[in-house]
Image (cartoon, rainbow, N blue to C red):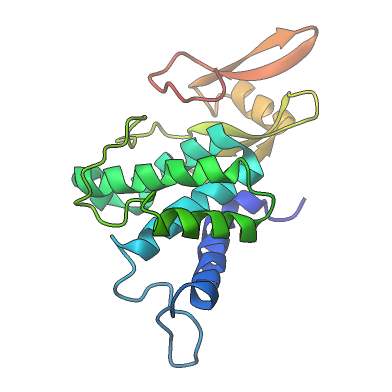
Length: 215
């Protein structure tokens, strides 16, 4: 099966975006060898930051659907940006732009088209480009804590059945058969399974996550 796309998609989308920005919007900071420096000073809480959140969220939407993209966006904020949890203005900016990215990810037919949509949206003031913006995101907030071995579905088959799952804590991708086996062996105490028409289906036990896509 190779390395699952979800394990490197965030970084891939970020680097892809920075090249698009450098070519079509404005010069990005460079290293001595001329390549773009993704860790350069000045890439946070501004237009670049806004485009990054929106673009990555849009790419997740194109690859895995809107619900999974929303979930991954808020889970990623928890692990990679503790500042967003501590500062409501930055949290609001990130969630606002994530939501914008998902909306365009649903209609974009290519990643270049997604970028074009978002660049236009940013120039027209649709994205939030500084934390002091007074507009407020009305959806679910960033998750403050996630239980160990939190699992989401990331792929369905043509009939809509969940067939691929992602353990966000340990960054493990599992087939349905692997996940069911791990549930039965006691590795995932927050999950169980039910049988529908003779087919076993992994499900989440009752929890506090409204967005949990395993029920």
